[in-house]
Image 1: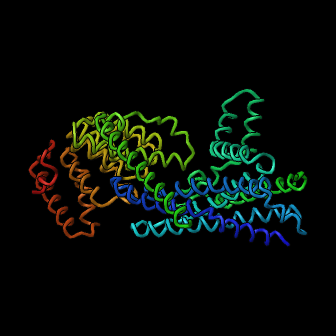
Image 2: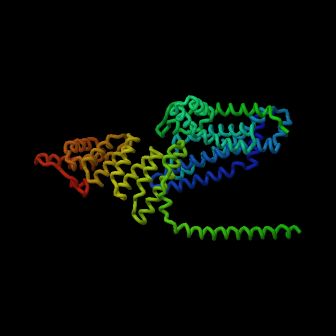
Image 3: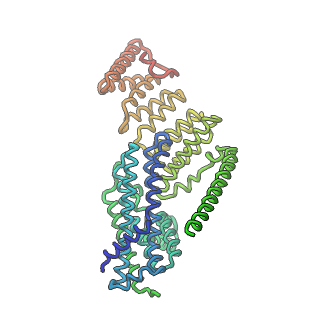
Amino acid sequence: MTSLTVARGTLLECLRDRVLYLPVIFVIFLLFGSVFLGSLSLGEMERLAVDFGVMGITFFSLLTAVFLGIGWSYQGVTRRTAYALLARPVSRRSVLWGSFLGLVVIQLVSLVLMGSSWALILRLAHVELQAIHWMSLALLFVEILLVTALAFFLSTVASPAVAGATTVVLVLAGYGSRSLLDLAEQTSGRMVQGIAQVGYYAIPCLSNFYPAELGYTAAGGPAGAGLWAAFYGVAYAVGLITCAAAVFSRRELA
Amino acid sequence: MRGGLSATPIRGLVTAAVLAFGAATAAQLALGAAASAVDESRRLDAAAPAKLLARLPALPRRFAADVLWVRAIQSYGYHRQGDMCFDSMRSHFEALTQVDPDFEQAYTFGALVMAQDAGDPESGIALLQRGMNRLPDRWRLPFETGFIYYVVQGDARRGARYFDLASTMPGAPEYTQHFAAYTYMLGGRQDLAKAFWAELLENSESVAVKRLAAEALGRIEELERKGQRMQGFSARGPLEIVA
């Protein structure tokens, strides 16, 4: 039994649990609503429809990532559904990687569904998506990968409730982590500077996944910045899952 | 037993649910009546925490700006249909452009509302100046500055300078040159007006514009021959110069 088999099992379990039905349906309604709201905005229909779409998809995707990430620990360990899997000839590392992969694939499916509905709804409203919007969705996928990995890691070291709360706090901190660099520049105390800099590199910098933060506009942007952001997200997520695998492989399961 | 046990509780639950939803709807109606008695402008015109919102990361900051934009439009519509008091517009658009300094339409629409509806062209021009500092390559910002100087304040000379500036920017439509040419004429700068008209006569793709330019040039040359200058501002608009 390999990680891929576990991933397939996780994917089927998510589909059986109908985890993503409600968020996806809700976002599709929200996208229709954004076009309606845009039509009331005095010439800024395109901007509002696009922004509300990005915001809605991002918010629900991240929420789902947090819940799926911590839900794995709840389902698998607290409710002992993983025990049946662990009784088979499969390493704990493979179970963890496979489960993570399954969750990532289901979120990719959900993102593709939401993204294509968004493009279709905007097209019906005569709004064309530009390259920067597709780039936003691609980077959002990397962000989802990272947030799921973070929730996954935290759920292996803490209870689901604590892991969930900590993930949400770290996600919020991750959006503002660049302020830590500003703090380091503005302060004269070396210790504060050091702490701020360590915090900046330790907390996942989620603003990396927004093209506007990387200097992109509809006209273009810095070459390679998007790829660097994707590389950063994937590397960070791999690091977190590796740590989670290390913790999980030594964990005492009652 | 099967029918007796399942049908009665469900009927009871459905009745209870209908009654509960009915009660909630009645309460909402009462709340709606109470809410309509409250002055809506207090909600619409409450100051936005612009400094705080401006510190948010890019995505939520842009979203906050969108919400402030819809709120500003709502407030404008509310006052336009009611008391015609537009004093709050300045704070709406200043907060909005602070939260998203790249929101071009917020500068142009906000300035127009301040200048024309609120009767405060200085604040409108100040808003546009901030916009021009932030977005120096957008032709609409100097164009509208010129428009406020010329149409609202009756200052064709200053208006012409901004129309001229707008006409040199990327993507500026041809009519920015018409405005520059007209207002230079009205402001007494016939030399510059002549240059603009000559440019239009030579390069415009529109036959109507070429004819207009030829007429304007003829009029300027006639004035020059007579040793006169076109002076002053006409409230009837620039077209009378070639009438």
